Length: 141
Image (tube, rainbow, N blue to C red; front, side):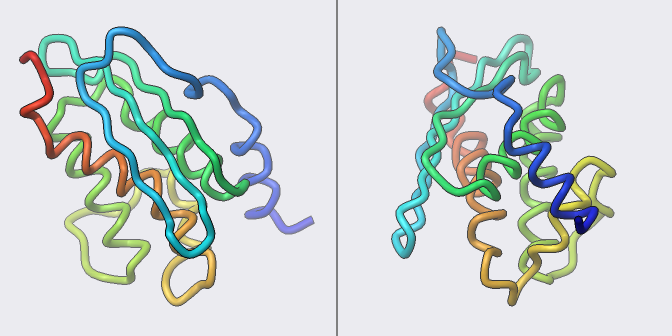
Protein backbone atom coordinates (compact mmCIF):
# COMPACT_ATOMS: atom_id res chain seq x y z
CA UNK A 1 0.00 0.00 0.00
CA UNK A 2 1.09 3.57 -0.67
CA UNK A 3 2.81 5.05 2.48
CA UNK A 4 0.81 8.31 2.26
CA UNK A 5 -2.45 6.38 2.03
CA UNK A 6 -1.41 4.29 5.05
CA UNK A 7 -0.72 7.42 7.11
CA UNK A 8 -4.04 8.99 6.08
CA UNK A 9 -5.95 5.81 6.92
CA UNK A 10 -4.25 5.57 10.33
CA UNK A 11 -4.91 9.24 11.12
CA UNK A 12 -8.55 9.01 10.03
CA UNK A 13 -9.55 6.43 12.67
CA UNK A 14 -8.17 8.31 15.70
CA UNK A 15 -11.11 9.62 17.76
CA UNK A 16 -9.02 11.56 20.32
CA UNK A 17 -10.24 14.92 19.03
CA UNK A 18 -13.86 14.05 18.18
CA UNK A 19 -17.09 15.01 19.90
CA UNK A 20 -18.11 18.20 21.67
CA UNK A 21 -16.19 19.55 24.66
CA UNK A 22 -17.46 21.78 27.46
CA UNK A 23 -17.01 24.63 28.03
CA UNK A 24 -16.50 25.93 24.50
CA UNK A 25 -14.61 29.22 24.20
CA UNK A 26 -14.24 29.33 20.41
CA UNK A 27 -16.19 27.49 17.75
CA UNK A 28 -16.74 27.55 14.00
CA UNK A 29 -18.54 25.57 11.34
CA UNK A 30 -17.13 25.03 7.86
CA UNK A 31 -18.89 23.22 5.03
CA UNK A 32 -18.00 21.99 1.57
CA UNK A 33 -21.11 22.81 -0.46
CA UNK A 34 -20.04 20.57 -3.31
CA UNK A 35 -19.83 17.24 -1.48
CA UNK A 36 -21.59 17.87 1.84
CA UNK A 37 -18.55 17.44 4.13
CA UNK A 38 -18.76 19.60 7.24
CA UNK A 39 -16.83 20.15 10.41
CA UNK A 40 -17.74 22.00 13.59
CA UNK A 41 -14.63 22.76 15.65
CA UNK A 42 -14.50 23.57 19.36
CA UNK A 43 -11.67 25.14 21.33
CA UNK A 44 -11.02 25.52 25.06
CA UNK A 45 -8.58 28.32 25.79
CA UNK A 46 -6.65 28.73 29.05
CA UNK A 47 -4.23 31.62 29.64
CA UNK A 48 -4.01 32.27 25.91
CA UNK A 49 -3.18 28.63 25.06
CA UNK A 50 -5.25 26.08 23.17
CA UNK A 51 -5.80 23.73 26.09
CA UNK A 52 -8.25 21.36 24.44
CA UNK A 53 -9.98 21.04 21.11
CA UNK A 54 -12.39 18.74 19.36
CA UNK A 55 -14.69 18.56 16.38
CA UNK A 56 -17.84 17.01 15.08
CA UNK A 57 -16.89 15.79 11.61
CA UNK A 58 -19.28 14.62 8.94
CA UNK A 59 -17.07 13.94 6.02
CA UNK A 60 -14.74 11.66 4.18
CA UNK A 61 -11.68 9.92 5.53
CA UNK A 62 -9.42 12.77 4.34
CA UNK A 63 -11.39 15.34 6.37
CA UNK A 64 -11.13 13.10 9.45
CA UNK A 65 -7.40 12.51 8.94
CA UNK A 66 -6.69 16.19 8.30
CA UNK A 67 -8.56 17.20 11.46
CA UNK A 68 -6.76 14.65 13.62
CA UNK A 69 -3.35 15.66 12.33
CA UNK A 70 -4.11 19.36 12.71
CA UNK A 71 -5.67 19.01 16.18
CA UNK A 72 -2.63 17.15 17.48
CA UNK A 73 -0.44 19.97 16.20
CA UNK A 74 -2.62 22.77 17.64
CA UNK A 75 -2.95 21.56 21.24
CA UNK A 76 -0.73 23.61 23.56
CA UNK A 77 -0.13 26.40 21.03
CA UNK A 78 -0.91 30.05 21.67
CA UNK A 79 -3.83 31.51 19.73
CA UNK A 80 -1.38 33.31 17.46
CA UNK A 81 0.69 30.15 16.87
CA UNK A 82 -2.50 28.23 16.10
CA UNK A 83 -3.66 30.91 13.69
CA UNK A 84 -0.30 30.89 11.90
CA UNK A 85 -0.20 27.09 11.74
CA UNK A 86 -3.66 26.94 10.12
CA UNK A 87 -2.79 29.75 7.73
CA UNK A 88 0.48 28.09 6.70
CA UNK A 89 -1.22 24.74 6.16
CA UNK A 90 -3.83 26.37 3.92
CA UNK A 91 -1.16 28.25 1.97
CA UNK A 92 0.76 25.00 1.43
CA UNK A 93 -2.34 23.17 0.29
CA UNK A 94 -3.23 25.99 -2.11
CA UNK A 95 0.37 25.97 -3.46
CA UNK A 96 1.06 29.50 -2.31
CA UNK A 97 4.04 30.70 -0.35
CA UNK A 98 3.96 30.47 3.41
CA UNK A 99 6.38 31.61 6.08
CA UNK A 100 7.47 28.18 7.28
CA UNK A 101 7.66 24.56 6.25
CA UNK A 102 4.87 22.28 7.40
CA UNK A 103 5.36 20.49 10.68
CA UNK A 104 6.42 16.91 10.20
CA UNK A 105 3.05 15.55 11.36
CA UNK A 106 1.19 17.63 8.78
CA UNK A 107 3.53 16.98 5.85
CA UNK A 108 1.50 13.94 4.71
CA UNK A 109 -1.27 16.37 3.70
CA UNK A 110 0.96 17.82 0.98
CA UNK A 111 -0.17 14.87 -1.15
CA UNK A 112 -3.48 16.75 -1.46
CA UNK A 113 -2.11 20.09 -2.65
CA UNK A 114 -3.98 21.98 -5.36
CA UNK A 115 -4.99 21.07 -8.02
CA UNK A 116 -5.62 17.65 -6.41
CA UNK A 117 -9.33 16.80 -6.52
CA UNK A 118 -9.40 16.17 -2.75
CA UNK A 119 -7.71 19.45 -1.82
CA UNK A 120 -10.94 20.84 -0.38
CA UNK A 121 -11.22 17.78 1.90
CA UNK A 122 -7.72 18.26 3.30
CA UNK A 123 -8.26 22.03 3.68
CA UNK A 124 -11.66 21.99 5.41
CA UNK A 125 -10.45 21.43 9.02
CA UNK A 126 -7.83 24.18 8.78
CA UNK A 127 -10.43 26.56 7.33
CA UNK A 128 -12.77 25.86 10.27
CA UNK A 129 -10.01 26.20 12.86
CA UNK A 130 -8.78 29.44 11.30
CA UNK A 131 -12.31 30.84 11.34
CA UNK A 132 -12.68 30.00 15.05
CA UNK A 133 -9.28 31.39 15.99
CA UNK A 134 -9.95 34.59 14.05
CA UNK A 135 -13.24 35.22 15.84
CA UNK A 136 -11.82 35.98 19.25
CA UNK A 137 -14.94 38.00 20.04
CA UNK A 138 -16.61 34.71 21.09
CA UNK A 139 -13.90 34.13 23.69
CA UNK A 140 -14.19 35.23 27.30
CA UNK A 141 -10.45 36.01 27.29
